[in-house]
Amino acid sequence: MEVIKSPAEMQKAAGALRSEASPLGLVPTMGALHDGHISLIKRATTECAAVVVSIFVNPSQFGLGEDFELYPSSLDSDLEICENLEIAVVYAPPADAMFEKGYDTWIEVPSLAAGLCGANRPGHFRGVATVVAKLFSICRPERVYFGEKDYQQLVLIRRMVLDLNLGVDVIGCPTVRENDGLAMSSRNANLEKNERERAIFISRGLCRAQDLFVAGERSVNELKKAAHEELEKGDVEIDYIEVIDPETMELLEVAFDSSRMAISAKVGAIRLIDNLPLKG
Ligand code: PAF
Image (cartoon, rainbow, N blue to C red; front, side, top):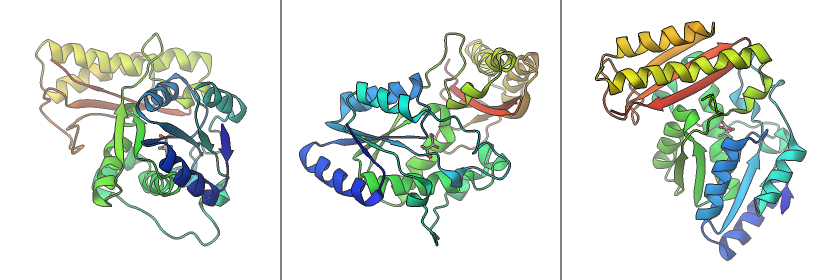
């Protein structure tokens, strides 16, 4: 397995890989790999002839006062995981190689970035869209793999790929959960014991809404009320609970089959997100 740090070298390696092994897959990550990432990587290795994993904690998607400095990092064990999964190349550039002095080009997907996490994290999706487009142009993948836990990110990237004719297949993969239902996230590593126990009420809120949906409830107010009650049990600080159209991200008042409930809440200082398709 090669570990490449320079964008120019990565581009060269990607060109060679693509001519020998197509389709070339990419799993973009910010490191601190967990079973959620591993499921993306495994899927990529079964569907692609060669796979690149990128590990880059992108400063431009963190706002002032957010957890950029505290974002968990475990490069040595990440590399070991990738080696064991027979990854061809890990692309792990330093920040100044991705955003050189004078960097001045940004990608905005304004409508899809406006609500949910975008409302609370101004500039976040501009940073995500820009770095993902750069990763595509550096790693030159034919298929890319993203988790559905970051659902707004997934929808926005699909839009960007269409709008800019990037010619990449975007594959969304189901959220991987701990045994008690907590969605896997690198940020879970920063939860104190008591916060870890309270965090499970986020997925319980989603499950409670899903149970009501199965029982025939379609009023978003009622579904949100039920989820809210669960979250209150965990004493978490709710950013939002919404039910959205899964393609347009439009907020709904009446839920339909496959509309999604999305939640963001802070447990102590850690902001966690989760979502679930409502299915009858
Ligand atoms: O989902 C993530 O880990 C990040 O937002 C991504 C897609 C790697 C871009 O930095």
